[in-house]
Length: 172
Length: 329
Ligand SMILES: Cc1cc2nc3c(=O)[nH]c(=O)nc-3n(C[C@H](O)[C@H](O)[C@H](O)COP(=O)(O)OP(=O)(O)OC[C@H]3O[C@@H](n4cnc5c(N)ncnc54)[C@H](O)[C@@H]3O)c2cc1C
Ligand code: SF4
Ligand code: FES
Ligand code: FES
Image (cartoon, rainbow over all chains, first blue to last red; front, side, top):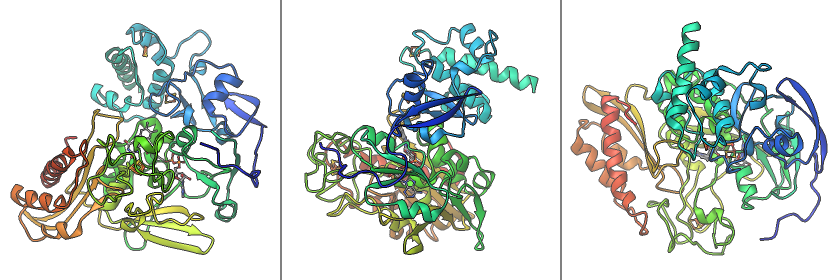
């Protein structure tokens, strides 16, 4: 298959350009091409390899990050589209050495085996809690279905999230 | 992905002016970026339409709602006005994709998403939708997810959206802007059947931009359901889905809407069959009769032939659930 490009793009940014991304509260300036996904920008340009690449097609959730507090698949968005937004990754969840309650709960409940899906699971769970739509294990299962775990740690993942939701609920 | 340029549009005129045959609007990117990575779609310029002012739900003069095209699927499904007045739409949207994808996907992009036919995605195989005239690999190939209604000798693909099935049942209208002005398209006329031109999914002109989706006043909030049957309980496309909406006076049906997903190149409605229910009692026998009528001309292609019986049973179950207003699935 040949690519259907025979002339230069008419307008807009066509080659590498400098953009600023707000990641975990700090501004990062990078030079990237428009076709770089947010996931590749994080991993390849910023050496932030906490966010994982599983399928690269929106089918697994390993690349989940938060944009303005909402969970998204970073493999299906372009870095240039995210200029101006607040991006949060797994690297930004703990406060110094103090882990995020969901990170604590994942350790407590042994909610992973190989750990490859874990950053995506935890970011997704943060998004889930921001949404406030899951109140019990069955709702957690449905609303965490965008994150696959090939090790099958699902039962412990659901337990970990349920515990944090119950705790935060009581505190609120 | 092929190299391309990127620009953000802050006004409709800019978006329309930038648009050429080789340029694409981009909403959430969840379908377009996927297909560009697969080399199925190519673009010279992506016009980011997320900054256009279509992020709200407005009440219309006729008592309905106008949904902004750049609102996300999640914002739409969880909006209080949708939850209250159009719960069928909320249920259908939430049956689709994953929370992450619904946070990204825009309402306009959802209507425009392409088929999930495996051969359409596989550039090593012939496909009339991807490369007109090359042939259809599915008709004599593996066609378990393919269409059973309204197919042609050129293409048997289905439209994969859940949201669109509910919009078809609700008689929505699509608002679009083009270089020649604005127009509205009745939902049933938006997506098309493949006929001899499967490369055309819908009736939108290449310069046109979707700006909104209008819902008429009637939301069928008392008797509705959306049933989605799939290989996996969640995060999977429909094999068959049914949006059913009834208006009842006691146990007599005064209005009925039935739209099917996963069975055709567009959300499938059969208004002739629906009218058979008007004035009838909401009984299983009457539901069976309407299911038989809707599937009367269905044609299986081998691996997907099971969908004919599956669709009938799903219609009967959906109408029964809508009558009782229980939402099991
Ligand atoms: C793994 C996976 C699972 C999924 N499962 C489901 C499912 O179960 N059910 C379901 O319904 N969907 C499902 N989807 C599909 C998803 O709903 C669509 O990809 C999404 O709705 C597309 O919206 P978008 O804004 O991301 O579109 P984009 O990818 O941005 O655009 C799609 C197309 O629409 C055009 N476009 C975008 N906005 C406009 C506009 N305003 N006017 C004119 N043209 C426009 C673009 O040019 C492009 O051609 C799934 C997707 C993935 C990746
Ligand atoms: S069914 Fe349509 S999309 Fe699939 S291979 Fe045939 S022509 Fe292509
Ligand atoms: S890597 Fe993004 S969803 Fe799998
Ligand atoms: S822990 Fe291995 S993939 Fe989930």
